[in-house]
Structure formats: structure tokens, C-alpha cells
Length: 386
Image 1 (tube, one colour):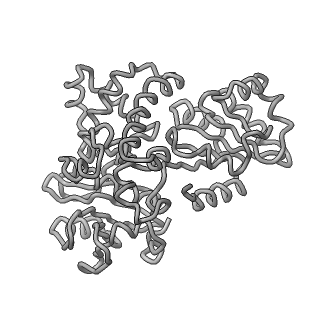
Image 2 (image 1 turned 180 degrees about the vertical axis):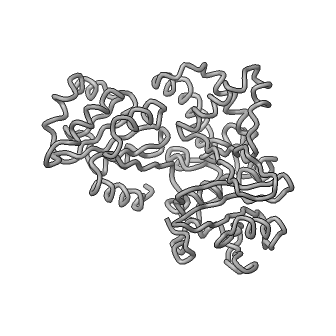
């Protein structure tokens, strides 16, 4: 059992100040397990909208919910978007007899309904699978290969983990998305998702996948937006500065879970991962995702110019601009690109994340930082803690 004490603390804090707390994240990321630590599944205050009994209890939702007290949990809320207006009414009652913890897999319908009905009443907490901080830095290689989905990470062996991820992708496309009203054929989405694995870490260009699939550019953009809405991919937007330089204005694409990326690339073992052509891009995406989890920035971007200067990750945190570069080398050094990014973007500091074991200064405002630090407790000392 992996302890998720930081997430539990965050949920507790949110429930103390907000009438409704939404815990959103991809399927099988551990939302239900977390919620059951607040309300037991056999309680009258627990509703699982994939359970026929819970659905029957909610046939008359106002009658079912209005007399409940304390904390009420509603799991898989995206299956009943009609509940959002009712939750608004219940959350506005005098004395606040009940608070609500709602769980959802971030379907487009969930996002749309909640933003319209619960504005100003709901606090949202996004979760993913296990983070490096949760599994421990000693498990980094296993975590990188298998990803953070609990059933993938905790599988008995590499092959069991790989098969779980392949089955997850298939089931997600064939069963879950259609339940949320997505009408795109599962075969088309699987083909696009697999194709997208080869674009991981690259600048997005809709024309190439559209041509390969024989569909229009707006169609592949719709596919991409859908995969972002359900937390499968991250669309990292470019930063634009008022510079006399031609800057890249298209986003970069990253898989949010390294294990799913590896499953779609056919990477089964550590040996496969180390020898695969996308190994470097996979490591970069893994570092970026773990950095975002650990630092919890207010804003995040990448930056690049057409002359070759670039920065893997630009984070805005408490008014500070912090740059992150991912270098899979033994001893990173200052490069012209780093110096340009430091000066042009007016960074407060630039950290070069690498797979070594010690931190050391590279130059003024530039520090080499071991990747394992993202799973430790010393980030606040560096001005980076979440």
C-alpha cells in the first residue's frame, strides 16, 4: 500500500473551506481509494454511479440527498451531469448541513457542467497516479517504466504491468469514452493515440497526423483536445516574450503517464526502455511531469526560438520565473541556449535536472539538481516547494 498523505491532507484542507470539493483525474488513478478514507463505501453517504444500487437511490436525487449530513461522496459524477444544479442548491443551504466530495474522470461534460453550475462553490483538486514522492526515489526506474497508475505500478512483474496498461487503453476507448457521450470510433482514437506516442516531446503539427489518418486537421485537433480533457496527454503551451526573435508558437505534446506511453510504444522491459529511440524523450516527459507534481506551479510553459534557443519548462510560481532544463548526462554544464533563456526570459533561477546524485552550482543563477530531489523534501529550501 502506497501512502498518499500529502493528497489526503490537501483534500482535508479543501473540505474545511469549500462546500464542494471535486477530485478529478484519469480513470484508475486512485480517486475512489482516497475517497473511501473519508466515507466508507457501505455508508448511506456514499454513492458510486457505476453501482446499480446507487443509481436506483438517486432516481429522485433531491429526496435522496437533502436529508444527509456531514460529508457526502459521489463517485463517477460525470455519469450524472444533471446532479450539478441540485448540488448547487444543497450547497447554498443555511448552516451547511452537508459538504460534498465529488469524484470524476474529467470528461468534457463534467468540466462544462461544473463550471456553469458550481462557480464559486467548488474547489477542484487534480490527481494523477502515484508520484515519485509517493513511491520513493529508490523506485524511480520502476516508476518511470510502469508509470503511476496504481494497478500498473503494483503489478507482480513487468509483463503483468504491461498487459494491464494495454488493456486499460483498450477499455478506456471502447467502454469509458462512449459512456461519456464521445462518439468517435475507438479504432480511430487508438490509432491516433498510438501515433501521438511518436510525437511525445515534440512540437505539435496537426497536418502530419491528419494526412496519415486521412482526416482533416480540425478532426485531429478534436482528438487531441479530448485526450487532454481526460488527462491522458499534456498540451504544453509556448511562452511568448516581447523579444526581437522569432519564437515557436505551437505547443508541445507530452503523455502524462510514462507507463501508458511505453505501452503504446511497445516498451515492455527496462532493457527495451534503455535501447528505444524514444528513451530520451520519455525521460524528458517523465521529469517534466514529476516536476509539475512536485512544484505545483501557478503557470507552466516551454520556450523556444527558431534560432535554436529553448527551455524545456518555464514555471511561474509566487511571482517568480523559474526555468527547468532536462539533461540526461552525467555532469551538465552551462550551454549558450541556457544563458540565452536566463537572460531573455529574466529568470530568477534556472535548474538543470539530471540523473546524478548531488546538487552543484553551474553558473550564477544556474544550479544542477538531481532528479531524485523532486521526490524529496528539500524543494522549499530552493524556492520550489508545492
